[in-house]
Image (cartoon, rainbow, N blue to C red; front, side, top):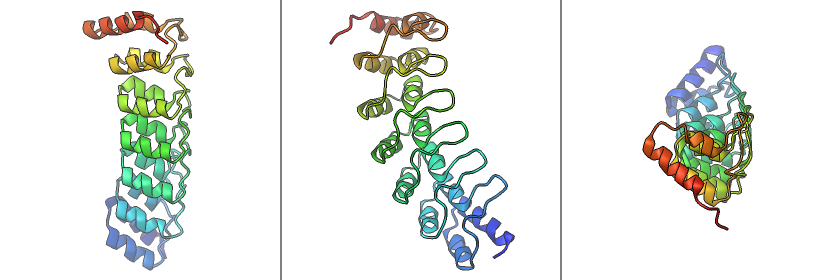
Length: 232
């Protein structure tokens, strides 16, 4: 075992060269060695969606919860990129589903932000914390609402995500959906009982924020929804 072999293993894993990975493991390359960014072979393989390499590395004594210099784990990286089967393999290998990177982001938060519905569902099934917050207080639901990922919003709400939780600037999922101009998400959140009178740090409600939307059609529709009477 030497540094060249260790570096070669990380590179081979990154590029998805399964035969090379197997050969290097057989020659006792250190499976938990890393680059200067502390990315191990498993992190690189997961980040790039190389399922067969991930499976091979998991069979060794690789550390499934190793973190790179940004605090990211293999699971966080795979979830962010939307690699469902890699996420499934890592959760089966007991990867910590609620691990956070240096920004406080969990695998679920990043999957929701990027719109990876099936990954979100898989992480929920693996008992991910649907109400986890990143460093600015945002939850998976807030990101999904802002970016208009309707089916993810539905999945998170079905998993009991809190709809009226506020982030560090006192925005909730509804006000974020309004700011993003996401009509279906606004409608869904209102139907679920989102607080339309909630005020952010500027003391503005969802209605106040909607008045400043640039698109006339979106603005008028969201204002109409916010003006509808609350039904029980």
